[in-house]
Image (cartoon, rainbow, N blue to C red; front, side):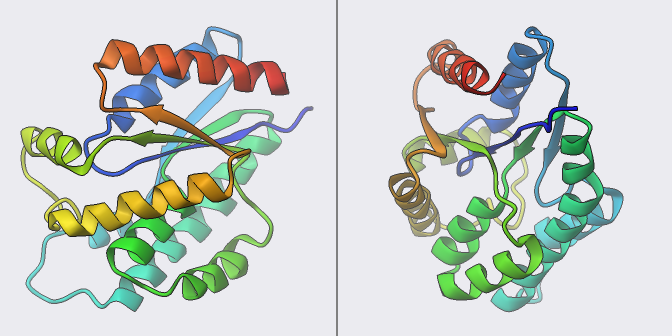
Length: 210
C-alpha cells in the first residue's frame, strides 16, 4: 500500500484554519483520497488532555520551558499513536498546526531560542516532517478582529498584538526558508477567494503525488 501524505495547515489566530481545513478535506475526498483530520496540540486522548492544560487561562505564570515541553509531549503521542499509523494505512493526514507552530508561537511569540526547539524537534520527531504545509496568512489586525468575534479567548488568543506580529514574522521566515514545502494562501480575502486559492494548491499537490 502506498504511504499517505502528511499535510499541515498553519497560521495565526483568525485566519480561518478550521473552515478551510474542512474545505481541503472535502476537496481531497472528492478525488477518492482517504483523509484523517487532526490538530495540535491534541489529536489523541492524552494529547487532548495536554491541550486543555496548555490553553486554559490561569493565574499562575506558565513558564516558557513548561509550555514548550508540554507541546512536544503532546506531539510525541500524536505522531506515534495517530499520524504515523494513518500514513502507513495510505491515508492523507491533515493536521491543524504542527511543529512550525512551535517555532512561531514559542520561538517567535515567547522568544524561546530556536535552537532549543530544534533540539526537541530532533529528539521527538527524528527525521519525520510534513510533506506539505499550507500557510494561511493575514495581517494581525484582521486575524485578531475575527478571533474576537468568536467569543471567549483562550490563553494564547489573549496575548497582545506584538506577540502575534512575532508569530507571523516567524511563519513568513519559515516560508521563505522552505519554499518547496510551503504553499502561501492570502487569508485576508473573502472566504470564496481564499478557497479558490486553496483549490488550486490542493489540486496541484494531488497532481504531484497521486
